[in-house]
Image (cartoon, rainbow, N blue to C red; front, top):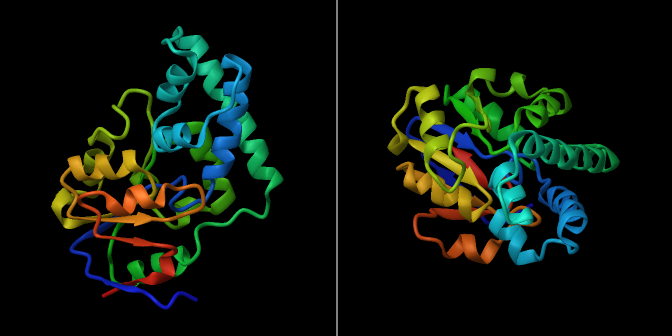
Length: 228
C-alpha cells in the first residue's frame, strides 16, 4: 500500500503504453534481446543499452545489435527469433498479470465513460498473445490497441500517439498518457499529449524519467491514480 497517491483529472481519454507499463515484462525483453545480442555480436546488452532501446521497435533494436539494416526477410526472421525467446520466458514466469492497480483503474474509467487506448511498440504476434493471456479486448476495444505495423515511425517519434488519438477521435492535448521509457515519453510529448505520467516499473530508468521535462509525475503502481 503506497502512502502517496494522485488525484487525476483526465479531460477525455487515457492512453497506455503496454510493455513495461501495463505488463511489467521489461526484464523478460532484456533477457531475450541479450541472448540475441550474444549470438550475433558476442556480448549481451548493457543496462544503458537496454534503457536506450526500451520502447523501440524490433527493427530498430535489430539494426542497433547488428550495426546494419538486414534484408526484409532476415529482419523478420530475427524479430520472430527474439519474440519466441521472449514468449518462452513469459511462459516460464507464469502466472502472468497486468500491472498492479490497473484492473481497478480500468473499471473506474469505464464507470466514468473515459475511453482507453493502448499505444505500443509491440508487434502483431505478441499482441495476439496478450489478447489471449490477459483477455485484453475485454478491457480495451480491439480497434484502440495500436501496435507496431512495420510502417509507422517508432517511438520517440510522435506517430503512434497521434494515431492513438486519431482512433479515439480526441485531440492529443485532452489525453493522458502512461509510459515507462524515455523514448515513449518523448513520443507522447512530441505528439502534444496534455498529461504524461511515468510508470516506475521493474527495469525502467526511474531517475531519467523523473527528471524529464513534460512528465507530470511518477507512479509505482496504478492504485496511486484516482480518477475523478
